Length: 188
Ligand code: ITT
Image (cartoon, rainbow, N blue to C red; front, top):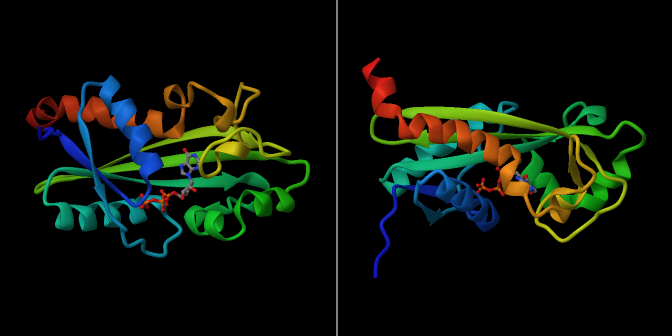
């Protein structure tokens, strides 16, 4: 039986989709997966990258779509890897990041969710402060084994409630609030 979806999540990264699907399910929105290698422009602004990705995704998917652009910003590295997080993970990885850090381990995860359909392009952002651990802990994808959210002691990879507090959760909550009430917003 074919499932019907409210909108699609365009990404090359299945982990991001799986988390987004769970989160949006909890807000009553059914999210399909449009697996796609989105072209990423070189820019210091996650928002510019996200808007471009969303337009690109809609032109391919032809259905209401969201994309997500994330970045891990490390204070002592002046915000590196930031917009280059995907490339840096694939190259130096978590071991490389840990080798670069000394005492100041403050960092933040940023998520931008961009929605695009025939008429609308709208973005929602959120951040989550935290620190980078001294060692990799737990089994998780991406930077999960090294990111410890503020006011917790565990890395994302060690938690069982990541989807209730992550940067992704916060941005998708803002998005859902708008998406579920967009007719009212449009009428204002
Ligand atoms: P897209 O096809 O959707 O662009 P991507 O993997 O390239 O997938 P991003 O550029 O948005 O995604 O994300 C940059 C990287 O940040 C990503 O590849 C992961 O390594 C990492 N990342 C993002 N969110 C994460 C999370 O919740 N936990 C761990 N790592 C995360």
